[in-house]
Amino acid sequence: MSLSAELTRIIDLFQLPFMQRAVLSGILTGLMGGILGSFTILRQLSFFSDALGHSALLGISLGLFLGINPTLMLLPFAVFFALGVTYLLEKTQLSSDALLNIIYSSSLSAAIILLSFMGTYRGGLNNLLFGDILAVRNIELATSGILLILCVVFIALTVRTQLLITLHEPLAQAQGINVYWQRNFFIVLLALVVAVSIRAVGVLLISAFIVIPACAARLLSQKFSTYVVLAALLGASSAVMGMLVSAAFNLPSGPSIVCMQMFIFISAAIHRSLKSLAH
Image (cartoon, rainbow, N blue to C red; front, side):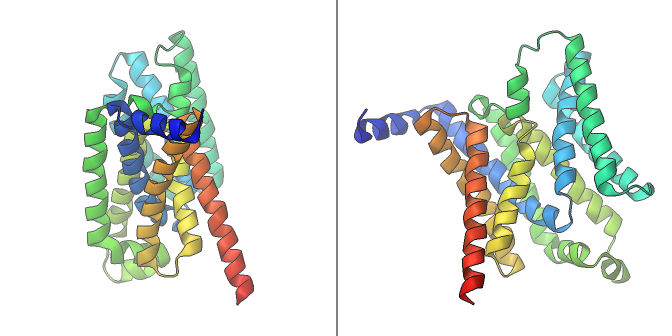
């Protein structure tokens, strides 16, 4: 097939409504992941976001087992799970990575056991693990759009507070900031982003959308304000480029996006190294 014919095929493919919804879903997820991920990695919560992603499989499995719509089950489950994990992290003497590893593995095991009671899940285990961004519906796009607005408004109104909590929590408390509620609201927001993005991205890949663009932006930016914006832009642009690669080579969409995010991260690391050598 000639290059012009291949380009025509890709252009025609992106004229289809389901492909347009997939691209928009990737952009929304990338923006949300970048905005919240910029704070997540600074607070060393990257493994926490991974545990949240894997717990989503337990929420979906529980919904299917009880005969409840998995989407309706997942949102409150993700919030409850996130607040429960936060409570355990504060009250136990275990290190966060050890406790999260316990929660991560046990929730995944419980989900697999529940799925085994139901025989073959008609939605397909691969769709749960790696997502099916091409099957995203308008209602899910609307939910992601509303959640993105909520993320932007929350960060815009509390950016100084969030930054102070991130850098020096005791100082934030000394200045009268209610750290408990600020931290928990951020955790709830992160849990909701993970929950609504599972359909498109999947359990195994959702943490990449939160961690990788933010880490790449961290390597490229000098100021915190540009860091947050750049993380969001890298998240969105990697989604578009990943979808283009997926369409061009007939590859799975979610993994293609994550591979593109990894490519951007490696490029940022090389750029940072070359810049250091130049100085």
